[in-house]
Image (tube, rainbow, N blue to C red; front, side, top):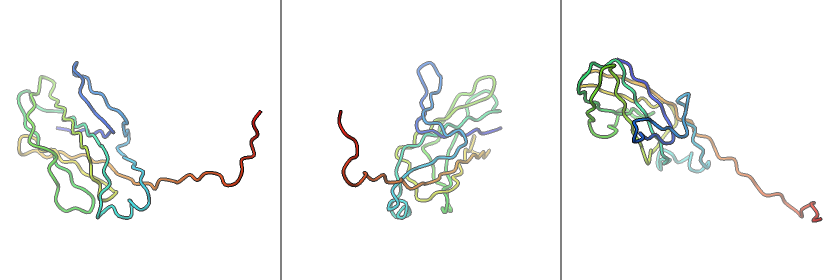
Length: 151
């Protein structure tokens, strides 16, 4: 079995079964911009934003399978569950897709987040993404009178 993890701002499954991803983080590096004050206080006051994860589990036998997803955050010793156990039918070809819309996603630290997917209560698969936080650069208005003239 193999797990493929994709991160985006928003992921949805359309009525025809296709998956739509908006704001795709192709290299699994999520870059969040925030004011310096908010970055300095991340551990006490987490940064909140929307994050969606797409998990594709390949190599499954046909039939019904259960999936429990959890996430190990940087500087945290215990993974936290990301929703209830999900059951998915797996057709011939052996793959299942899970979409997790984390809104809000609360980030207390930048770094590597490890997503664990337990299949049928035993097999553990993992994927990861990196969260980077950058300071928003403030833009100040020009000082003094404008040098442009009206025509």
